[in-house]
Image (cartoon, rainbow, N blue to C red; front, side, top):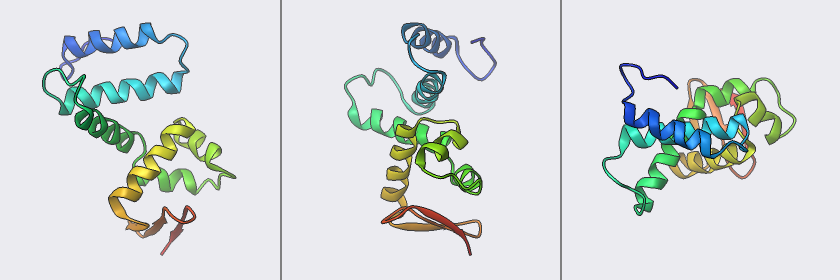
Length: 130
């Protein structure tokens, strides 16, 4: 990664270190890891290695950035046969998708309305135009 005016050299060093230490991870795993690290940079101050609340917050925010409600609707409209295909449509891993859906359910409850759609998280996930 190269430094831009918006990202400090310390975050570039952290991301490069994470990337190089995790060479066996898939490209999607690496992108998810980088998204989380950038979220830490955006929201955290100081050393948070022992702060599970800050760690969980960064993970939730990262998943929210990777899978917005808009992108979830768009990927669902491609009529995936299962959650694995939905994750592929979103360019994320199945695990991140499932965690994001759980995050959204905790945030919104069983369902939410978004831009003319009803997104139901539980008991059965589906999205419909309203």
